[in-house]
Image (cartoon, rainbow, N blue to C red; front, side, top):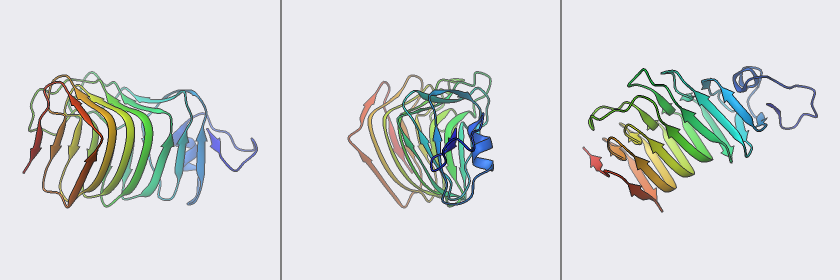
Length: 193
């Protein structure tokens, strides 16, 4: 990865090292490769995932974690979590009054399958107490695909939302949720309390 407005003066071996070195208003350009890491977003630091980028975590830590930040992740990359030892793996975790925009090709979690539809584990996308604008071609999880927890404002656009073992979308106690142009496959359920 490198700073988008820099001509090769600063390059980094990981996305997280680029994030840590960035100030607000920075755009990080990520070159095609597989990045085996779990990244924590930083306020005001935006990321562009070029075509051919896979950001992959194989741990219970979220692949991309947004905690009280305003930022965006855009491009044609894939955000993936393949942890096979934990129910609580998540690909994207947005919480604590974050304001996040994500536009990418795929968000997927093929980790430990969660077959319990009322537990918020094993998600491709988990959003709580935040505002999120999500647009991607494909969202997949072996657990609950999308879990939208309390006090969230969410605009979600995806061509396909799919799970193999649980519910596609769970919505709990939210301010506003819009789901657009989505096809839900497998044992679909849509729950709101």
